[in-house]
Every structure is written in structure tokens, then in C-alpha cells.
Length: 162
View 1 (tube, one colour):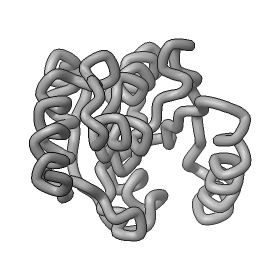
View 2 (cartoon, one colour):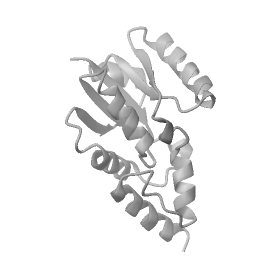
View 3 (cartoon, helix red, strand yellow):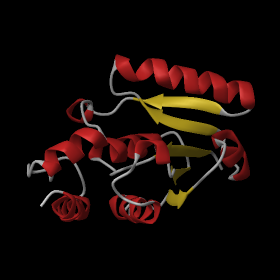
View 4 (tube, helix red, strand yellow):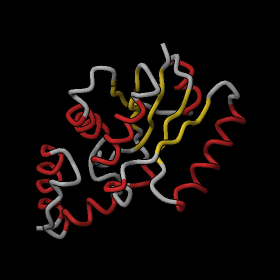
């Protein structure tokens, strides 16, 4: 079975993320969405909440598994029997960071490939940070995230910014 791992913080998962997941299923038999704690980013949602939201957003995709992960990505990829790391490239600004990560991952384990997907144009500007900013200012995010994710975002941000 050809397995790919799509790692990320997913704070929160956006339609751009789900677009990358759907596109990657054209190449991989199974995609594991690996939700990372990434404490350096000070996530709005805790790890369990983010895993739950990714599961909600991908519930109709039978070939997708969602789980938390910690540690070195290439080790996780190997442990899960996967062959590649899946990453999305929205704009040229993403390329430098993703290129560096792909090279270090290759240096750490030459058997793990990096595969890059571009989202549909209407999602190319979406980031979780932008979505959180729009939601924090009371703006509608229903066109950018799963309806349940939008609801949770507004509930969480109301608590933080009354």
C-alpha cells in the first residue's frame, strides 16, 4: 500500500488543507494526517481538539487516518510504513521553508520522499492564521473551514476576546 503522511499543526484545519488531502488521495492509497503539537506556535486549540476537527473535516474520506504525532517526522513516517511526506505549497513564499525541510528530511532518511501539492486557486491565500484573525474580528469564516470548525472558532475566540 502506498501511504503518505500529511503533517501539520492544523490550528484550525482549512479548506486549503482538505483540498491538499483530497488531491493527495489521487497519488496515495492512504493518507495519514499527522497533527503535531507545535508548541512554538502557541496553538489556539489543544492537540486533542485539533485532531477531532481534522477528523470532522475528513470524515467522508475513507482512506484518511488522523492521529497526533510527536518527535522526528521521518521516524514517524517510517514507523507508519509510509513512503512520503505530503506538503502544500500556496505561494513562492512557502517554497524556501518547505525546500529546507525536504532537504533535512532527506538527509535524515533517504528513503522518505517529499511530495508537494498546490491547492486550488481559491484556497491559495488561506492560512490558519488568517482564518483565526478574521474570526477574532467577528468575520465570517464559513467559506474557509468546515462548518463545525467555524462554530468552534467563534466560540473559542469569543472566550478569548469578549
